Length: 144
Image (tube, rainbow, N blue to C red; front, side):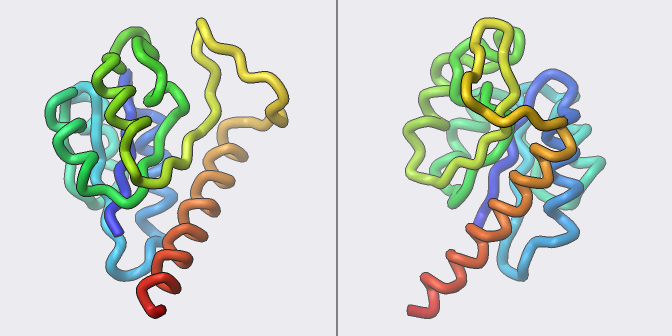
């Protein structure tokens, strides 16, 4: 399975996800670190082993090869992350048949109602556990 971690701005959330995941991924699962800008990609690459790509065209092109996509919720919202998520990127992520595990961080123009309040570390722990469960489900599907 190939897992895409998408992040923008300074790449902090993506680098934390990459660091937490890379130590626990089962064999045969690889990370693709996708930054909307070079700083985000570099920050993720410093936190984990994986392949990195940068920019709208590279992200959209590589999404079709992924089995799972993760990152902040903003990756499915056009103009999120201070405009770094283009409408084309948001559409490509949302339309991808890959599973999506999104960290529910609010955007200035989007409010999430009904979500349990949790700190960032708690949200990242939940995301990592869910991703690892999905990796296990993938292994079971391949054995059938």
